[in-house]
Amino acid sequence: MSGFFDNMLIAAKQVAILYIIVAVGVLADRTNLFTEKTARLCTNLLFYIITPCVIVRSFMEIKRTPENVRGILVAIGCGLLLHTVASVLSIPLFRKGDRQKNSVLKFASVYGNCGYMALPLANAVVGPEGVFYASAVIMSFQIFAFTHGVSVMSRDNEGNRAPFKPAKLFFNPGTLSVLIGLPLFLLGVKLPDMVVSPVQYIASMNTPLAMLMFGTYISHTDLKTLKQAPGIALAGAFKLLVLPITMIGLFKLIGLAGLPIKGALLESLIISASAPSANNTVIFAAKYGRDSGFASQTVAVISLISIVTMPLLIAFSSVI
Image 1 (cartoon, rainbow, N blue to C red):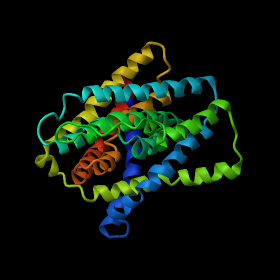
Image 2 (tube, helix red, strand yellow):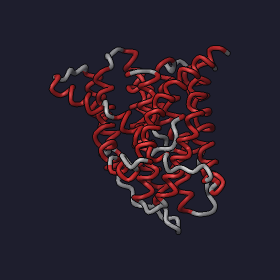
Image 3 (cartoon, rainbow, N blue to C red):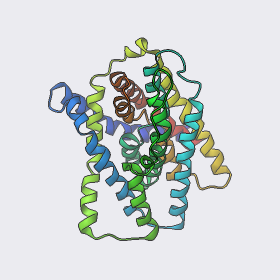
């Protein structure tokens, strides 16, 4: 039992460090130094430039060994499994009532903050190896988000969906950065410092900027929303408890079957599975005409609750 509490305290300490930066973001928003409106203008910078640099850097910094090669391939497979299970388990949810809000809630239930929350936490708890494995989950996130996610968000009142564009499976920041970084890792390519250093400098912005931006969203969160929209509570319970606990069980079973799901790889996968709802919930809601204000509130509330659930789940996964 002491091992559980020790691991929980380690994870909680790392989450607390991140949320101190979030608190600075809240203060910055309240004093109009860095507001939510300004933070949203930084979304594309984070999405298209900084996060891809984080992913590419993780592939450049990890030594190529047979164990790491097996690990990244397993991580990609487990990322696909995570989003498949999430998509299937969410089918019975949010089928009645306001279609606009239901689309937001279902997307928020399935898609976690693999980039802005899981990457910084994986780096804090596990180190560069954690970012390396968590990056593989981002690739599966992008594949599902631009297929299943678009289907969920784009349904109109008659149930029709937006046309599927296969190019988006590959031409998106997450997949492209993995497709750049993975060959560098597998081939053992060493890039010159003139290339590596700028990537490292840009990547180092990810954690502070993402957390500051998140703080501006939290600044506008009202927990009374849970009473006004009980669907948020259900989405939060599914995303923060049902899904990660299910995946912990599946990952453990896969590990027992002989695949190397343990240590840094397992911790990174659990961090990705237990991450709160993705910021893309708001981006996709705005793009497909859903209620983006409701989406923002949903993401903020679920993320706030994750302060408690993520350390518990990370610790729980290490003792079962």
